[in-house]
Amino acid sequence: MHLAINEETSVTVDPTIYDVDSGIDVLAGERYSFSASGMWQDGNCKCDANGWNSPLFSVGRILNRLRGRNYFLLCLNLDREKSTYAGVGTERKHWDVPGDGKSQPRRLHFFANDWAFMYSNNKALPAADGGPLVVAVKRIA
Image 1 (cartoon, rainbow, N blue to C red):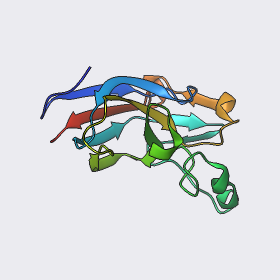
Image 2: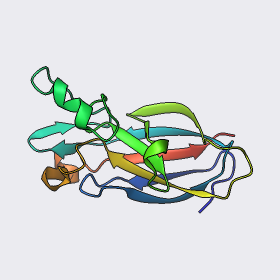
Image 3: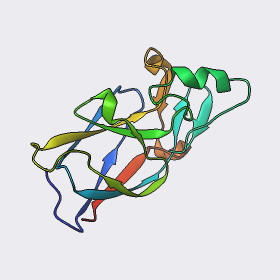
């Protein structure tokens, strides 16, 4: 799916999946906004899309996929490529799709920022516990 300007859709992001395929194709030069709601869980820590941090675990953030950023920060990438990782959190008012404007469509993916080998202790939450985590994606230009 490719969104028209001012078109919006939402994607449920399951934190147990390494890269959640949004079903959205984007082109270089387009601009999008994101707004996330709901909760998800990392081990015993329930949080929103801004993730969590603790002085006890701050050193370990260098092992997160998006290094140095909060655990369970909602992040995105294009075509599962590490070079395109970007933080989203609960709100990102604008994100410009990188590229030279001549490239082919690329697939937008979301993920919970965590250690690459620790997705086994992540949990999607039911509505009764504040879940799931859903991100609204809107093309703004």
